[in-house]
Image 1 (cartoon, helix red, strand yellow):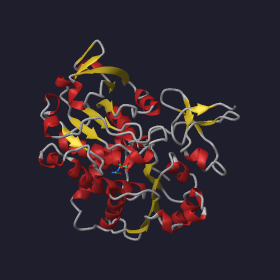
Image 2 (cartoon, helix red, strand yellow):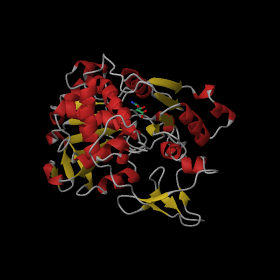
Image 3 (cartoon, protein in one colour):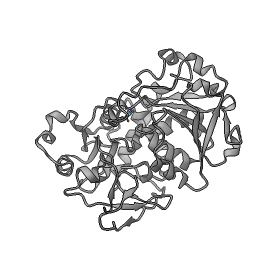
Image 4 (spheres, helix red, strand yellow):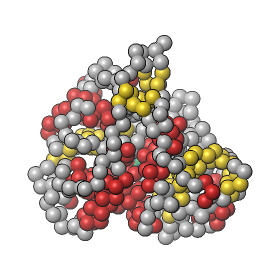
Length: 392
Ligand code: NCD
């Protein structure tokens, strides 16, 4: 049984086959071909969602399947103190596939250990959001005809923006280059940086931004994740933003609901993407993507610019999810090889996860702690990918 808890659970070859299946599915959008007739999807949403839940449900309906939904945590047994494992066991016994959104990092992996059916991670705290990444990659392929070799700028809250965590890793594995420009204090976590540099050939470079006024005075530094940094307008560690020729600008909102007590009250300091921003020479050919919801980081005037691609991106979430669900339910046979499973390491006595909002800590009463060696060779928590603390 296959689950999708991290974007690393799919090989690049498999993702490419999913694109082909999604293309085929797009042609059946208005005439459900009943591939999933008789199947039920359980959607368990412990956090708010519009696009993700409804695009999954639309995908299932379009394929002739049905859906049972828990969209409001207040109406579920969680308020009575039910554990995640028990909720998943139960709803898994009512359905053939589970889609889970949860505020704890690593919740989807934890769920996969107890679920009798495949689990799809629809966002686990500030950790990952792999199906949004499938949608983002599928959109890039639509807009640009390829993914390999693209220059993608990730812009916004890269610390808590879980979509960027899955996307940065996938882009590196596809051979695209990534430039990260983060809200000051909300830079890409080290765990994601390590996962990216663990991809063969990818190096990470902290760069000074020149001509970066377009981003706002607060953005002086960027992080380049590239297979060949020489392809970038770089001189002695300084990146010339005017000569960027970005292919895509991926914007995220400040994830204010996840800010820690010390970060509370933090306001967006990066410039919003508006008409003036897009007149900058570095973004002439850049499509603008956003996982949505947008708050104020993209001006509404950009909706009318042909480079504004975020509504098309949201729409493409349906066919790609149709492809994924059919695949995980064994209704699409793939010849592509899955990725090798990273080996689990025995935890050392007293070793534990450092993240207070990791499922390993919050549901630790029954959940067996798991340790992995990450792509860079470090021992990390298998649920949230963050480094471990030794016994005190
Ligand atoms: C994103 C999420 O939930 O992480 N939304 C989505 O699924 N499209 C992005 C966000 O909430 O900012």
